[in-house]
Length: 340
Ligand code: SF4
Ligand code: SF4
Image 1: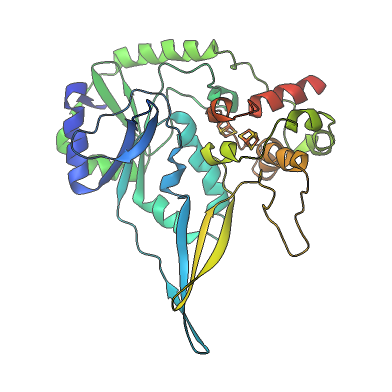
Image 2: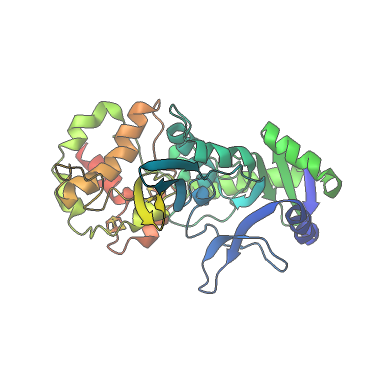
């Protein structure tokens, strides 16, 4: 297996960044971590997860879709898309790495979202295995192995070296490009540490959360559950849970007038908002209960129903720590499971 000694990791980052943009989690001033472009002196964060997920690289919070230039009665359509440059994202955790397979199912099915596709083709995902999980982690519930994350390349450390496992042709191309910085390493010690970490994950408080009560075949029973009223009561519709979630993918498209035309852009939206999917006749979900139910039914019922049983949550735990009203998908799953 390929490896780089940890004391040479910063040199590796510098080398990659000299040829293409490199992003990785770094500590913010408030002690939390976020993905930032590598610059001289950047230090890889030791925190488990970033505040916002890595989905921003492929599905940014706002983006310009197209411009219209208007002259009299003539309207010229200006394609604002540009071919992306190659870039790499280092340090993507197993939960976020899995989120891309969920987003791919949405954005790469027909009609393909060319904006997302362009970024996916140019971005190399270098994931990083987890050794010290948080109490809010539950990725294993969704069949994710946190010590063998997905991605084009997956990295793991034994405390002395960083080991690189190539998973895709894109990953292969990446390591070939930087072949001179790698050395061959024996991952024997690493495998023992992975086994130890897997056992730690089995002991997490949410490791035994069950998904048995969910899925497309339970649709109407779950939809009609009286529990939604109680569960949604404290939700203030702030949308935080959707903005930090690596798998939420709703967006709005808006036009605004410029001096000589119109700019069309899209931005993330939230099914928790009262104006979400508002149409000429009004909003199809008029109460917070309906909006709240939609978010969780989508992740636990509708998405698996349309995608061979794959759930729309990766157990990253972000919504467990960020919701101002302390409501989250785990509380919903437990409440509905009890009922089942
Ligand atoms: S569940 Fe929590 S984070 Fe999500 S919209 Fe409601 S109050 Fe905000
Ligand atoms: S629903 Fe919560 S735990 Fe699941 S992927 Fe989204 S933020 Fe993470």
